[in-house]
Amino acid sequence: MDYLTLHPEDVKAAIRKRFGSLLKFEEKEGLPRQSVTDLLRGKTSARVAAAVNQVLSDADATAAPKAKSGKPDDSRARRTSHCLNAKAA
Image 1 (tube, rainbow, N blue to C red):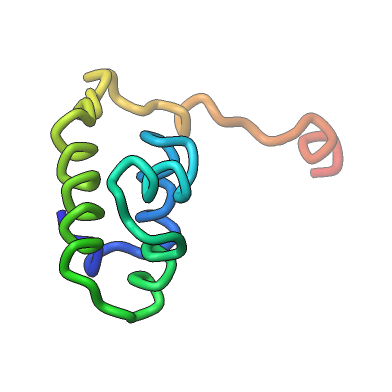
Image 2: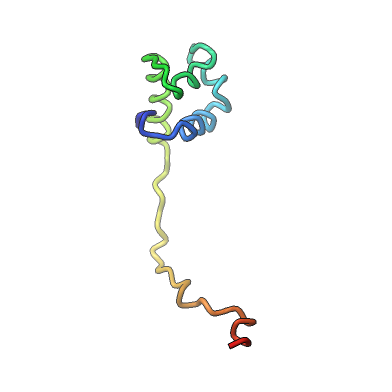
């Protein structure tokens, strides 16, 4: 996944999930301080973009697919009006 296809807050959330903070990510990757913020604001850097895209692709690879229960959603069939509405009618 590319950082350009996601909302900046989603990019930051993915980094924070894995590293705890943007600063820790920047320190671990040997990037300048505020470089991720600068990247998300439009200041391009190939090295920072590559590091961010790597985190996003790793997050995609480890994400578990959502499983459907296989049960039909019958919540509408069980829905009834509130007891006070029934009395008012």
